[in-house]
Structures are given as C-alpha cells and as structure tokens.
Image 1 (tube, rainbow, N blue to C red):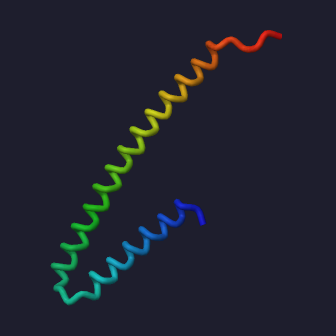
Image 2 (cartoon, helix red, strand yellow):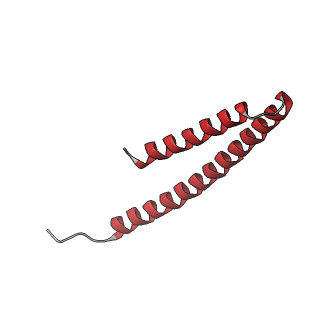
Image 3 (cartoon, one colour):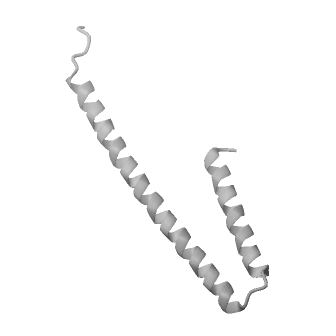
Length: 80
C-alpha cells in the first residue's frame, strides 16, 4: 500500500472515529452540532494551510527545475 493511501486511510479512520464518538456522546443536539462545526472549521483551516505549503513547494521546485534546465542548456556538450 502506498504511503498516500495509508495516510488517507488513517485520516479517514480518525475522522470517522471522531464523528461516531461525537454522535454517541451524551451531549445535546446543539452541543453536538457546535462540536462538529468547530471540527469542520479546523479541518478547513488545516487543508488551506497544507495547500499553501504545497503551492510554495511547487513554486520552489519549478524555480529549481528551470535553473537546472538553463544550466544544462548553457553547458557545452561533448565535441562530436
């Protein structure tokens, strides 16, 4: 199993377990909805942060690839 599938399975399991725990917990409907809402906002914020991190990483990788390609193009090849 690839690491991305394993990570997705772990996150899904944690989310499902948390949701079931919240729904089964002895709290009023209002408190349960409030808890779910807070969790959803937390997940949204975490995903937004991770997307920004991924974007930054991709920008750096693009710059690195461009620099490497320019270096390769400017390096003279073997004489034929």
